[in-house]
Amino acid sequence: MNRLSLYLVRLFTWQALALLSIMLGLLFLVQSLKIFDIVAVQGQNFLTLIGQALLGMPSLAIVLTYVCMGMGMVRALAALQASHELHIIHTNRQLPTLLGAVGLFAIGGAVIVLFLSNIVEPWANRRLDDWSASIAADVVGRTLTPHRFSEVVPNVTIVIGGRQNGGNLTDFMADDSRDPGMRRTYIAKSAKIATDQDGYVLQMHDGSLQYLSADKAFSQVAFKTYNISLNRLTASTGGPDNLAESTTPEILARAFASNSWSPDLERRLFDRLAEGLRVVAMCVFMGALAIFPTGRRGRAWVPLELVALAVAYAGNGISSNMAGPPALAALSGPAAVLVAGLLVLGWRLNLLRPRLRMRPA
Image (tube, rainbow, N blue to C red; front, side, top):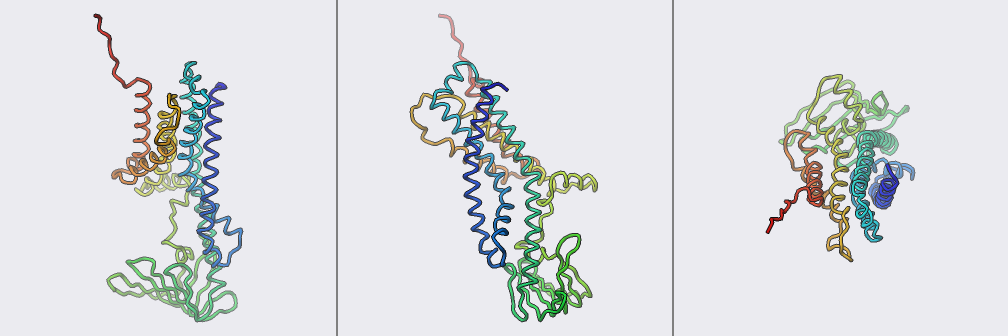
């Protein structure tokens, strides 16, 4: 890497980091305000608010990184054009160096995003899920009042008859109506919150589990002892997403050990791989538009920063609406953007334009 390449990569990086830090800061505030009421109602402290907001940031950072990289590169190249440095680079036939800097910037960003999507985001999801389960256990064990119905999460209502020493709850009843197709009601003479190797569990004794389907079909199962994961009962949605909470090495290790590759597993792996391809595609497309100087004195009618947003939206739209194998559905969007960027670059390099031959008079 020569000095010019290092200078260009550093310029691209600083512009992208400036945009990314501003966007992440704003989204962190939004995330904190979003969960503030929930944390306050649960009686948690300020550190819980900050911690849960931070654990929800990796997924947002993945989406924002490649968009900010495209915008940052466009802003850096616009600054180079305004100072006539971009013209000097082309005049001195340093276009290969400029293309190499764009490629190096794209590859470095892709590595960072792949690390975030394959390692950091699953770890953050797991920690957030464990933390939420701990808070739910604290809420269920501390705030339930005998003979008073309490909604621990939307559509999950719990009532107890009383408390005993050792944390035992008597006359326990929980009604779970989150699933529109099946309503579940847990009834037990006694219950207790405990922990095992999988986390917090609700141990119920001498009770029954009642099912009521959407077509009013009723069934009941009696039990002597029944343990249920507390997170399954207190999560805002259904059960936890094990794939979302598992890093890519963990998923691959389990898949190779069991020799089982489900469509959901394949789609998850290709979705994470596609995040790195999105970075490369964005940089190639935006670089093809901005690395060549123009004679315009003012800015274009459509700022290239908005083009980066449109490209990101189009790529995600293609991936979301593409049917077929998991690899095709996940990679189709960034692959289409990458091909479009290469075509634009080839056209501007006169590689795709027909050459006119001069005929002798």
